[in-house]
Structure formats: structure tokens, C-alpha cells
Image (cartoon, rainbow, N blue to C red; front, side):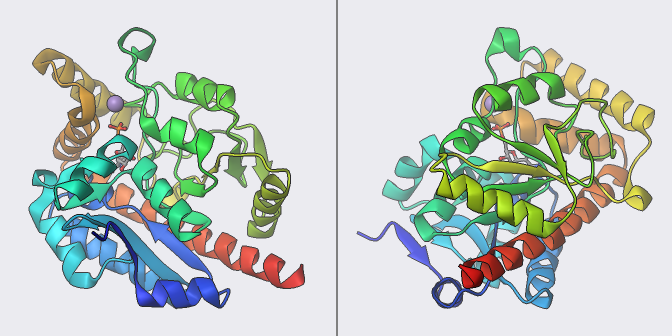
Length: 307
Ligand code: PSU
Ligand code: MN
């Protein structure tokens, strides 16, 4: 029985030291509405190709953990939306065994990257420690995956649906470097700053690639989180977005929503409350992260040639 597959173009790129950038699929099925989700996912792949890299969107397709989904597969995930399984590490054996379709989270996608040998992965936001997680223990498996799987994840920081301070503490405990790209202020997804500090600031894709290489050579298990602020022109007003996030969190509390439904519920609620403003920002920050991920992946290929 086949449970894992790497698309031919991705295989060829990996073999010939052409940069590959992995992309997750929960953002398509659970993170954005149709049809913007499909349009964004396809545009992301275009951007990666324009940058001279090969995109590898990851998902479970009829039970096969697939690295490098086709256009049709991306459309299927986007149209099916939240009816498709949200697949984190723990869900992988079940969804593959039952030959189901599933959209991989950051954790699920990182694991697939490890199997495929992909170093860099771009997304919008990662999961983290939710507000009140000191009581509920609702801390995303993304953080533990970052602790154990050597893949670099480029994101726009953590949203304030999460407790950003606690999320950073969890990452520190787990030994995960949080690298601010040209910033030492942890970005808060829709805004460039959160007021919390990153561990360090690196100012070029080459420096990030050097840190990834050093981490590997020192046999430090686990990944790295590169946080890339949303471009100023697309960022939202902090009070405006915080107000709407608070409303969404209160609604989730009132309805008793928890577990794997919580993050998709909050994202959907915020998109509705902001009448698409948050979605527009979300799309732009993903493009921005994808461009940076391509530059880092390209620098890693250069370093590999130099060795
Ligand atoms: N944050 C976003 N958009 C997303 C997600 C998080 O802004 O689409 C998705 C990612 O796939 C992430 C997952 O890995 O939610 C985290 O879910 P949870 O909090 O249940 O671990
Ligand atoms: Mn959770």
C-alpha cells in the first residue's frame, strides 16, 4: 500500500539542487473561503515558479501523503473546504489508512518535508499557545513539530487569537529559534509589531540560510521559525483588528468551541467581522512569506554548492 508520494518535478528539483518551497494545505481548506483560497494557492505556486523555485503543496490525497499537489488536487481541497480532514501529525496514520483526503497543518506539512528532504516551508501563520492555554493546555502541535523536525517555517508571526507571549515561551522551552526577518519585534500577523521581542534579527536570506546550515551541522534537532512582518501597506490598524479578534474569541467561548475546530472557527469569524479586510491582508502576507522562503531556499542551494 502506498502512503507517500513526491511529485516528479519536486523529485527532480531535489535531486539537482534546485530550490524547493513547501506549502501547507489547511490554509486552503480551513484558513480561507472559496474561491479566494484556490486563487491564492495557485498564485502562490506561480510566485514560487517566477522566483526560479519549485512549489510543493502538501496534502493527503486518497490516503497518499502527497508532496507536490496538482492544480486539480488544490481545487478539490479548496472546494471541499472544512469538510476535508485537518491533518496534523497525529492524524496522518488514520487519514492515510482510511484512504481519505486531508489538508495538512504546519505540523503535518513539516513532517512531510522531513520525509521528502525539503528544508523550507512558507505559510501565513502557525498555530501556538491559545489564550488561557495555561489552563486549557490548548497548545498547537505545530510548536512540538518545530521542536523535533528540522524544517524552517516562514510565517508572519502569531495572531492575537493566540497568547503571543506564551507562544514565544513555549518555543523557547522547545529550543526553537525565532528569527525576526529585518525586525526584532515579533510580528502579529495583521500588524508588523506585537511588542514582544524575537530572539534575534537577521537581515538577509543568506544569513538565515547560514543559520539553517549551522543548525544542521551541529546536529540540533528541530526547526526554525522565521517571522516576516506583513508589508506596511497591507497591514491593518492594531486596535481595529484586536477588537474584532476579541469579539471572535468571546464568541468561541460562548459557543464552547475547542480542539481542532477552534483555529478555523476564529479565522472564519474574523474574516466575517472585518468584511474581508483581514482576508485581503492574509493573502498579501502569504505572498510576502513565499517570496522570502524562495530566497532562503535559493541561498541554501548556493551554500550547498559552495561546500
Ligand atoms: N493560522 C492561520 N491560518 C491557518 C492556520 C493557522 O492564520 O490556516 C492553520 C495552519 O494550518 C496551522 C493550523 O498549522 O491552523 C493550526 O491549528 P491548531 O491551532 O488547531 O493547531
Ligand atoms: Mn489546539
